[in-house]
Structures are given as C-alpha cells and as structure tokens.
Length: 244
Image 1 (tube, rainbow, N blue to C red):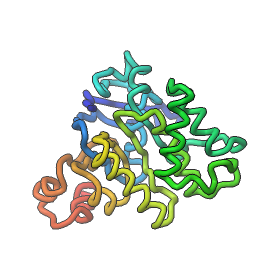
Image 2 (image 1 turned 60 degrees about the vertical axis):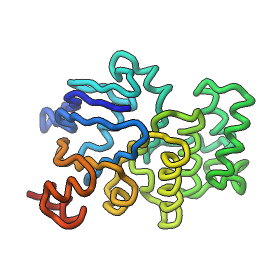
Image 3 (image 1 turned 135 degrees about the vertical axis):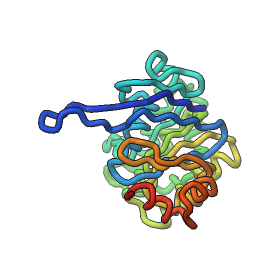
C-alpha cells in the first residue's frame, strides 16, 4: 500500500542553515495492516506523513501510495487516502453535519451517498447529540470525532492519522483506538498512524517504525524490535534507540 524510496525533506533556516527533518526513509506498509510510527515530538513523524499525503513535496526521493507516485500523481493519491492531523482546523461556523457533507462533496460523492455516510458516521462515532451544533461550540473530543468523520467520509483505502489521540481524555482516546482496530478487523482498511504514546503502539500495531532525528532506528514487529535491541519491552527498546 505504501513504499518509500529514500524519502527526504529538509528546510532552510536563516540562522541554522539546512535542517534535515526526514533523512532517506525507506519503508513498506502492507495492505490491510496497522503500521505505527513511534517517536518523540520533532522526530520527523508528521513531516513524513505530510509528504505521503502530498501536503509537502519531498526534497529528495519519492513514495508510492496504492501504486500512485506522490510527486507525479498527487491527485490520485489524495483520492485514495483519508488524512487526519492534530492541527487540522474545522470551519467553526458550520455544523458537524455540514462539515461531513462538505467533505463528502469534495470527495466526489453524490447526495444520496453523502446522506448514507452521514448516517453511518453518526452511528459509528455517536455524533447524534451534536450533529446540528456549530463546530465553534464543540469540545475537543467532539471536534476530533467530526475530524475523523470528514477524513473518512469517502471510504478511503488507506487512512493516515497523525497523533489521532493527542489532547483527548482517556475515554475519548479509547474510542479512537477501538475505531482504528475495527477499521482493519471489519473492513480490511490499511492504517498508518503516528504517536508518541508507547502503549498505543503496543496495543494496535502489526509493525512499528521507531523514528528519531529524521531516521528510522528500528522497524518490525514488537518481538522483532525487542530481539534487535535485546530489551524486554517497547519502552526499554525505545529509550535504547533514541538516547544512545
């Protein structure tokens, strides 16, 4: 579903010169798996996901998403994915229903399909109590549920979530985790998500990439990473790879 080839991104800073945010990353995400990118803030997770979602252009290298090249076929990539970022803003003057309808239209859905998807997503995420409330009056958790709904209204093959539980309380976070798990179990979706919560990666992921300073330090199943690092749990492995 995803294959990167020396994917690299650097930025120019007046004082510090060239800053490499992502440094020649090579990874594959298999169809139907939950793949997690684990790292601290500033490790390069968000920049990587933004390149895969065609929000940022790579400085070097490229990647294919569902067979489409992110550099030469960005429109096809966008039609294939659902992308959620923690800093994606919603239109505060629209209601939750209006947001979902709007993004359904952007995704090329007809009115009948949009109505069906609004009903399905309302049931899935419990949006009924605030479906007709303006976004500006919703809580952080409610907004996050609307954000996920608008990201997947067009039923994408691949879902890319950048720290989807950031800022949520434990109950709300658990709801999102259960949703991600059900996407693969019930619908066979492929999910790529980033997090800095070790427990989320342990609970959800078929495979994990630990990224630090823009480079992948380890990649594999939990057991493979533990064997590679000679550690007994993911926390110990993570600190071994990111502090040595």
